[in-house]
Length: 322
Image 1 (cartoon, helix red, strand yellow):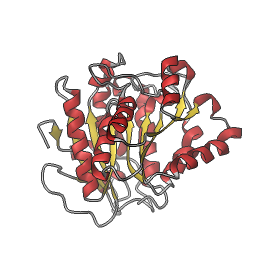
Image 2 (image 1 turned 90 degrees about the horizontal axis):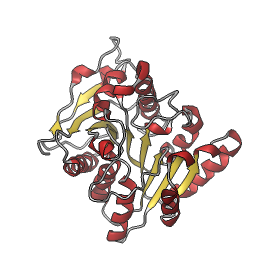
Image 3 (image 1 turned 90 degrees about the vertical axis):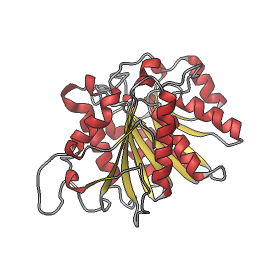
C-alpha cells in the first residue's frame, strides 16, 4: 500500500456497553493492509473507506463526500449485533486523497480490494464519490482474472455512463468498466436499478441501450411490478460467477437521503428497493459491495448516515451471507 493508505480509527466506533458484545462497536477489529494478512477461516466483512470527492468535483456535484467514511463509522457503533451476524467486522482503514490525483487513489483502492479478497474477506466499501466503483471493480477483476463472468448491480438515480474525457469522475465509472471490458475481450454485465428519466440526458439512455444495460426505472418500482423486476434481476444474475453490488445513496429520495452529492425528492424509498437488494444478497454470488456518495456536509439530522447504517446492518445480518 502507498502513502494514501490510512489505518482505521477505532475511537470512531462508540455505543452502549454490554457484557455480551451486543453492539456493533464491540465487534470491530482493525486490519492493517500494509503487511501480510492471514487467511480468515470464515467469511468476514471488511469495511474499506474511499475518502475522496475529487471525482464529484470533476462531475460538478456538491463536495463533502470525502468525509463519508468517517461519518458512517461514527454512526455504525450503536447498532445491535444479533444472531446471524458474522464472527466480527473488520475495518481495513481508508484510501484518502490529499491532492487531485484521483487515478492514484483508484489504483490504491483496487490494490486493497484485491488484497482483502485474496485472504477471504468480503470488501464493504464506504465512500466517497461513486468513482469508487471503477476502483472496486478493478480490484475484484484483478483478483478473479479474465476467466470469470463478473457482473455489476448498481442501485442509483444515474447510469454513471458519462465519458470520462481526459479526467475520470464520479459520473464515468461504468463507462470506464465497459471500455475496459471491450479492451480485454470481456462481456460487460451491468444492471442499474432506480435510474430516473429526469436525472440522465438522452445520450446516456442511448449508451445504456448500446451496452445492453439491464435497466429498472424508478417510475416502475411499484408493488404490482415488483415480482417481475425480481425475476428480471434473477435472470441477469444467473449466468454470472460473481456479482459486485454498489449502492449510490443519491438514488434514494432526499426525504431519506439529504446528505448526498446530488439530492432529489424524486428518488425511491428504502423499502421499495429492499426486495431487489435481497435478491442480490441471496444469489450466493456476492464478491464485493459498497455504499457511495455519503455527504455529511449536507446531512440533515444525520438521516443519510442512519440510512447507510441500516443498509449495512441489513447486509451484516442477511441469512446465509456470512
